[in-house]
Amino acid sequence: MTHRDVSLPVAAQPSLDGLVSLAARAEGLGYDRAWLPETWGRDAVTTLALAAERTDTIGLGTSIVNAYSRSPALLGQTAATLQEASDGRFRLGLGPSGPAVIENWHGVEFGNPLKRTRETVEVTKRVLSGEPVSYDGDLFDLDGFRLRQGAPDTPVPVDAAGMGPKAVELCGRFADGWHALMLTPDGLRDRLDAFRRGAALGDRDADDLRVTVSLTCCAMADAERARDLARRHVVFYVAAMGDFYRNALAAQGHGDVADAVCDRWRDDDREGAKRALDDDLLDDLAAAGSPERARGTVERFASVDGVDAVAVSFPRAATDDDIRETMAAVAP
Image (tube, rainbow, N blue to C red; front, side):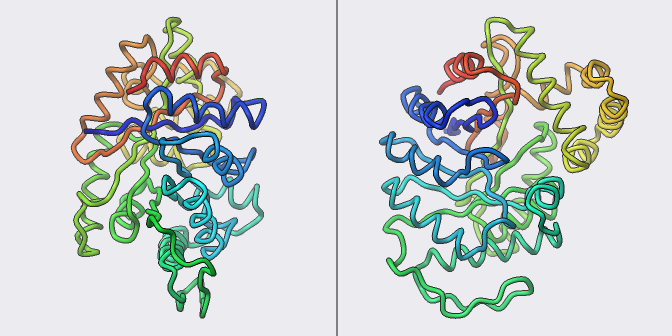
């Protein structure tokens, strides 16, 4: 059975209490895990620590924290602490993010993202083992670090995010799972081949690893508004977040659409950028519209062979009411 997760909406919450309350709401609706991205607002660690206190059964995780703003040793300490705080419900998701975030917001050079992700995963997992860490990498050189409290009673899985084939192959080879984003069902199947190839290179069974697909969802009685919010969200990511998502869309055979969206956005033609994203492609990238239509799209992604969990995420411009209506509409 494919799990139904939720990605907590950092963009729409006026208070920390409101954000944490959504994790409790997700638990009540039967979601399996609440993931929290970390962007430019509230930090994931504090928020998830509070969510651990206010929930009992729902899994918790980061999707994602970037691999540049914290050292791998600190990521290991953080994951161990959140595992203790949540009584074994925590899962760490990390990734390189992109140059717009790392260089412009954190002031760190976005160099060697694949190597950075691999070494961060390896060091973090060694820290979480509770054993002394000796690591001689190209980017990190550690000797003698050891968790003072020992390894967590419940091991912390360490997932990685990736979009391109090499990045996804790395997830299968070194991490405990892969977080997928901005992929059509066909693009997802293609990347799953890379994930399985990576698992084979690491002498691992891909079935023992976890694949989580983050899917933008907006399911409301006002179906037209739901689709408009989802379309605006996809267009923003393709056009305004550097070349990262634009290139990912082009690599899936939609380069003409990606170019048109970006050209019109650059000309300050927001409506034209939205029109450039046709309905069929929107339905391949987001679950948007009436509750029935959105649930059907979620199930289409959940049925892709190799997907273990679909994480319901929300358009960045969605209101709190929009989010709560969607959460209920596509709940397990």
